[in-house]
Amino acid sequence: MSKAFLVLDDGAIFEGESWAALGETFGEAVFSTGMTGYQETLTDPSYHKQVVIMTAPHIGNTGMNSRDEESSRIWVAGFVVRNPSPRVSNWRSELSLEEALIDSGVIGIKGVDTRAITRHLRDRGAMRVGLFSGVELSREEMVIRVRKSPQMTGAALASDVSTTTPYIVAPPAGVETKFKVAAIDLGIKAATPRQMAARGIEVHVFPMSASIEEIEAIAPDGIFLSNGPGDPAAMTEIIATVRHFLAEKVPLFGICFGHQIIGRALGFETYKLPFGHRGINQPVKNLRTGQVEITAHNHGFAVAAPVEGNFTTVYGAGFVSHICLNDGVVEGLELLETPAFSVQYHPEAAAGPHDANYLFDQFVGLMNREKSNA
Image: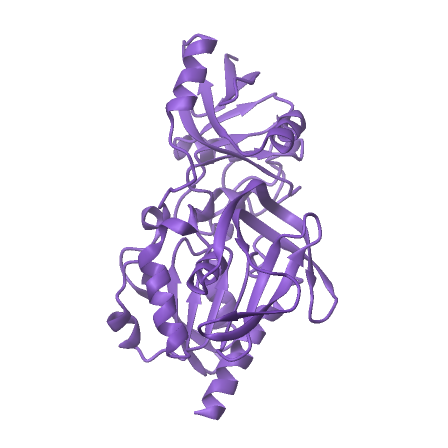
């Protein structure tokens, strides 16, 4: 087994062993606190250009299967684990985690203390990282290569992951079609349109490049903005599209990256978090009900909106509906005079938990209300 190195742009180097594909790769260093759900993480387009460090020490015991994939490929730039499972033990598995990573050309590293790396990132903040496996370079050369790699701030990455052609996810057999929604794909996960379809929504998934005229041609009952990678400040065209539909008072629901886009459309700034929120165990408080939800996250940016009281926008008053209990970050926005709301996390529960599924029902209720008022 050859040596491999994880190199951060502050010069820190962690030595491990080669695992998965060989070579070198670069991205933003992020850590995921989930003990499971690694397949959903790997195939989530939101992780494009990110090297994911799993804090749970034992990863890969359930293998990989085509039914749990959230997109057509693995998107992570690299994968870091402490102890990959030496064998697969699940009747649904079709291949091992390492085999899937090799097939996709994804470079990994094993045998490093992932929690020590996580503590390093929590102390010093998000930074660029390089994985070097089977590559003959000096330590100084590896650090230089990492420091020359692109940063996440200012990166417009959604176009890399968005569908190139529209497609439809229809309600399953026996479920009546009640609504038609235009979902703008900024990096959508497969579980999200399935959640809407199960509620009687015919989901028309559009490329992020779709024009307002193309979206309006299907006469949607609502607009959905998906999760996705990159810096929301770079998404000027999508922000303009959202402002159009806010002005037209078309029911609007955004999650994760879509939440940040809505925040900017409302006039708020977004900012880079020190190390982001990722994993499937993030506590969020619903400020309207007082209830705490355990939620799935993957975001490195946040919306700078006032938490206390209502705020004013050109689309009417609104309020912060959810906050993260770990650090007080805004996790939800809702307007009072325009049918729009958003959350910064993943209510599709892939992989788990299911506490936030009600948000899809809230979207249905919003469209029902607007239809009744029409």
